Length: 268
Image (cartoon, rainbow, N blue to C red; front, side):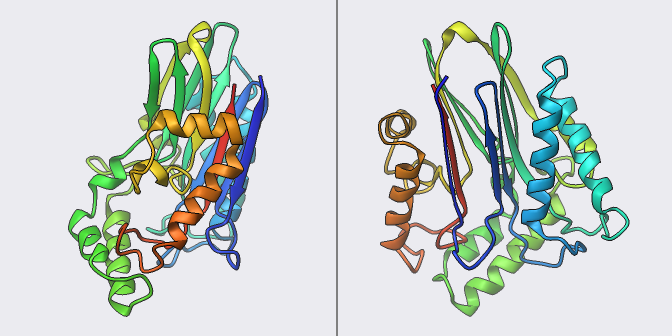
């Protein structure tokens, strides 16, 4: 299996809060949630994503374990790394959307928790696996934020209100679920497997890399896989940045960040 990975911070002056690892048998991708409020954590989102990602890479390497169990133990292990220094009960405690793909003898297993997108090209067509529950929260606040140009005081105030509304629904029944401090969020992950003989190529994208389809509507998912196959993940991210750069006010394509951290992993 050929594997290619690229990641790029949305802002060159800020840490990249995405995290990824990829081998011939395991892919782990995390998208750390932007902190617009306090977090109660002295370490930061990038630290959390790296700690959780590293834990998951080790735990999921045991092919006898369930991916959801690996995520549960990974969340618990990461929480233990800063339980004595940070307030893990804080509403804004660091969190991350998570995706894992793992090859076993006869199947490709997947897990998604949060808005990371997994693409699996099979003999029966492309399966798109993502968790859009966060998009169904804070809708009024999100629409208000979309009304204002990026960088304006009105936009910043609206984004803060939106974040508070999102946090109120995070890891709550009827809301959305991500990896944070509660290991039992793993029970809400989307999981499944596909017979290995049906799999042609796969990709994992953080939402910053999925924008050409999910936000801008300029490509379809088969086009994304073709770009990844023919030109690699770096080219996909370059195309995202070009569109973002052509709309600096974020008014043609309403969004919460001019440029988001973007990570793409491709395997075939």
